[in-house]
Image 1 (cartoon, rainbow, N blue to C red):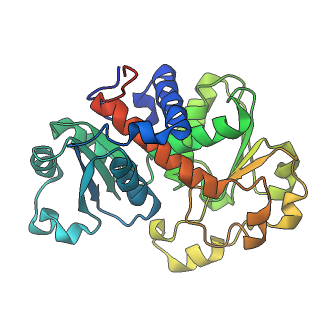
Image 2: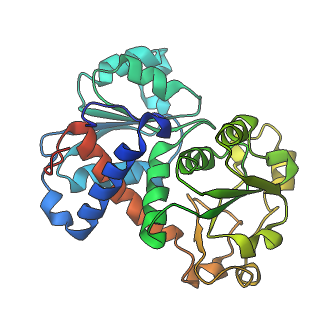
Image 3: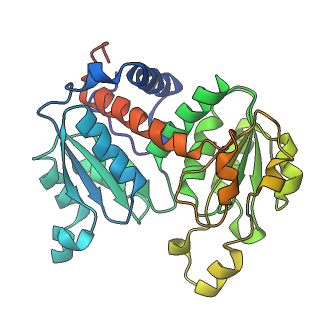
Length: 310
């Protein structure tokens, strides 16, 4: 039962609850028309304190395809924060209007704080370098769609592993499935944070670290690419030095298995060459479409509107 539950970190949901959401998403994909008015009269508030295209549009599209409506902002200076309102008071206020709050914020822990004061469920749409759980659900649905299951996969995550909240969330969540192995591919300056590796160590989950993408390619079931995030760097010089450390090309794709898939949370900058887009193993734009369906399923579950008995 997920009704009235908030989603701040992937750990907030059990594997069984995650499977509930993924199974409902698959049902919606098969017959989206039968879900088109389940949220009629419901209102989603999207509070985006930092820029977003895919995540905000995905939530807005999901709610409207369910027959609901959205309100909110994507510029915090148009909100009462510009007047000094606290996050707690914003949560209390907005939840008087809305049935569900989606929040993105550059500071870690903000979504959790908001969930403690809101009178409705809160979904974390990304908090700093911490977690991005609905991107994780998107990634899980994509993997399930192409691979059938999560067990026994070798997953390579490549690029900015230090600040990549989508990667932190995905690795943490996938580590709950049997037989998953990881390859962490990054420059030394952007290695996976210690807290993620400590979690894997506690569970006895194997992982290797490397800065050699070509060497890793033949071993992978999944390659999850990520951009080096300019907005997380204090030094512009350091960003420019690292931003093109890895570029996925056709030549590198030739080293991979025929059934490997390439994923990316987008936006990309230079880390995947446009020439790779035509490779059938490049699934990152389909990943975007699947993200809308998984958010539709999540909204229905948290509002208790799953007509199959959430």
